[in-house]
Image 1 (cartoon, one colour):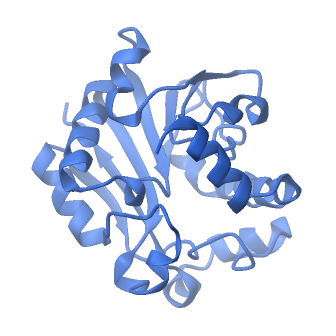
Image 2 (cartoon, rainbow, N blue to C red):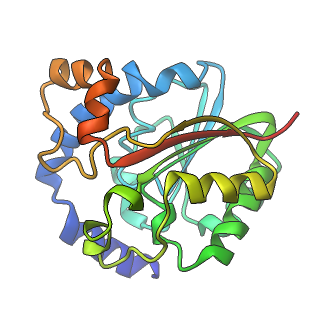
Image 3 (spheres, rainbow, N blue to C red):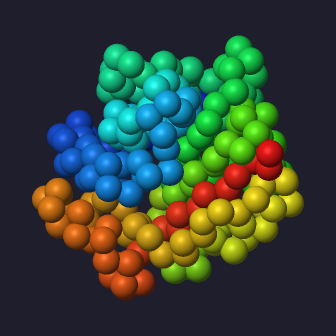
Length: 222
């Protein structure tokens, strides 16, 4: 999918009216869960950053966004550096900078096949410092056997187990693997009231009922 097609698809799937709601959800997810994996002094890359919901709400010394969609720039905070490049060669575009964290949310399922996934995982290893983290959110095919394919650009079916195997094969060490974390989408599955989102994040027992996405943290060996 080229940059224009990606821009058109985003405009169909996400209206600008929805962005304040999504941003409110991500602000809580970042502050009350994801931030504990990221230091204020870290350099963080978000691959397939979308409209910047993660990077705009996470604390880090340096923030780098990677996305082919040229529209991403107008939604990113001024302290976010954008690279409009392909995910499979993003590391070479960082001018030799090694990063502490690579993050991606709801992206891997858009890759065309497992061979491309392997290429991308190797690229993440190239971008990370020794001991750096790769943080992944994504829909878990195990709990979404039909609904998973409701999105036109979903190609690669992954579960927390299959992705864990792929990560280990490429040389990552697994630190965290939660099979059921967030609901599948932000459209009605999570409340927009920050207090209710905060409560959800504090109650892992509820994740087992509503969670359809995995959360994985993998480390580049020292």
